[in-house]
Length: 213
Image 1 (cartoon, helix red, strand yellow):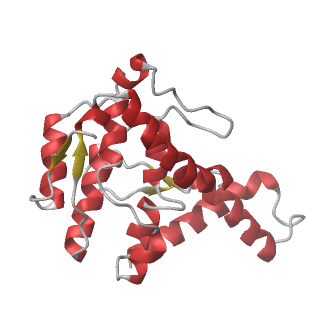
Image 2 (image 1 turned 45 degrees about the horizontal axis):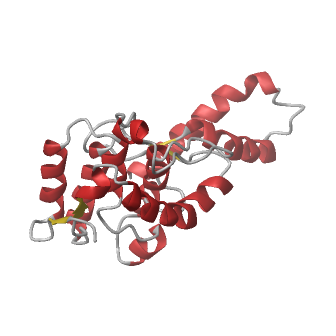
C-alpha cells in the first residue's frame, strides 16, 4: 500500500503551494506524483459545471496541457516515443525539464474561484520513483492520456511558464485551420503562399482579442 501523505485537510490551492515549496526543483518522479495527486475530469464535464471554457479546455483532456505534461514526465514527447521504464532510476531522479508547479497552481487558483478546487493526495513512494508505484501509475497514462494526444496533429496549447498564466494557444497548431479559412475567402491564385504570414497573424490576433472579451 502506498505511503500517502494526506493533504485533503488543506484547501487544494494551499496544498499545492506547500508541495511546490517542498519540491522547488521537481524530478520526473515528483512531476508524475504532482500530476497524479488531484482529479482531472475531461474538459466538457467542468464546462458543464460552469467553469470557463478556455480554462477547462486548456488544462484538461482531450487537448489541454496536463496530459502532455504527464507524458513528458514519462519521457514521451512525440508519437512513436516509448515510455521510460519504472526501473530507470536515473530518469526518475532527473529534473523535470518543463514548468510544473506554475500551471498546476494556476489551475487550482482558477478552480478555487469557481468553487471546484479538487483535494490533493500526495503519494510519497511515487514521488521517490518507487518502481511498483510507477508501474501502477503508467497504466492510467497509457489508457487515458496517450490516445487523444497521439491523435492530435499538434499541441493545441503550450505549457505556461509563469504562475497566473493560462496555457498559451499554439500558433503553429492554429495556423493550418486559419489558412483553410483564408482559402475560402481568398482563392489561392489571388493570395500567394508567400503572403500567408500577415493573414495568419491578423486572424490569430482577432481570435486572441475575442477570447479576452
